[in-house]
Amino acid sequence: MEVDSVLVLAAGTNPSPSTLQALRSSIEDYWRRDDEHGGETLRPAVVGQLRYVEGLLKGQRPTPIQNGLYGIAAELARLTGWTYFDARQYQQARAYFSEALQLAREIDDHPFMANVLACMSLQATYQEKPADALALVSAAQDQARAASGATPRVRAMLAMREAFAHATLGDRKATHNAISEAHSQFERIHEGDPDPAWVTYFDEPKLIVDTGIAHGRLGEAAIAEPLIADALAREDPANQRGRAFHAFWLARTQLQRGELDQACHTAIEALVPAAAVSSERVAGHLREFYEQLAPYREVPAAVAFEARLRAMLPPQDQRTPSSIRT
Image (cartoon, rainbow, N blue to C red; front, side, top):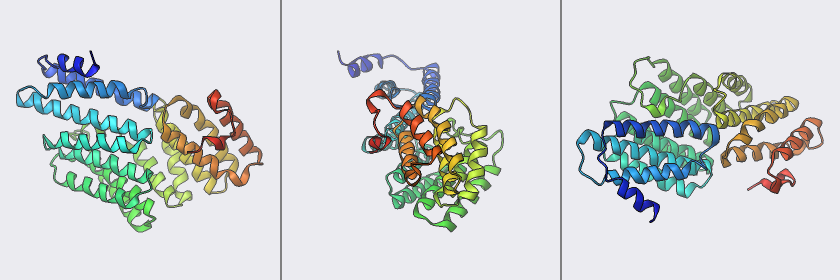
């Protein structure tokens, strides 16, 4: 019997509030494991649970249960899209993001629709489609304005995604304005705010590091470097992927400032968390940094980074690092 058929049969059970809580707990565990290990090996479990919940949605349920199931299915679809995005499989990611939007529309969850659109905006920056990125984050902010439940933390996260889009376009003034709005909204956060669980990751270190990255995208390395360094020092050690990303951004800004030895040292340190996660996005940042070292290939610091990079590649990739480019 196929897996989907098994899940449909299992979906014949009668879900209760404790069922919803169990599913939400699973999602929180997926978030943690995604941060620690990447989404590649996680995806089959997430997709399987998504299909299970979609099976539950086919029955007639009390409204609170049905709405809860729609919200859970929407997050499972978004998370599946996120794992494909992290693997740089953008077409599949967009399909699941679209499914997440459709599920959230069923219960008019405007803040969550804003979240999904913000994910799509970030993906557009990676696809070098900054105009699309700006249009998507603008649509996300429209959804947030339509929602009474859009907390200051949600609005701060969306403003920072807007800053990324403007920075990718090279619009310095608009980027600075969006950064200011993100910080202004963040200052309005209160302990009792009814933040959705999916936005709690956007804490002060995340605000600071994203501010640094936005400045870094504009080439404002002198502003970006201390911000990224400060946030990296305070980041949760278990967030391996985040630490790898942010360390590579720090190395990049240090290189922009002419601090070659320090940049290579930072990049070497970044290889440890980078090797711990299965993430093509992390690998992409690694490749970009290696390519930026092209003018300095004979400098000892760059030679040391390349040696460490070779040592950490899988055996089948024991070639020159340039061969791992895509």
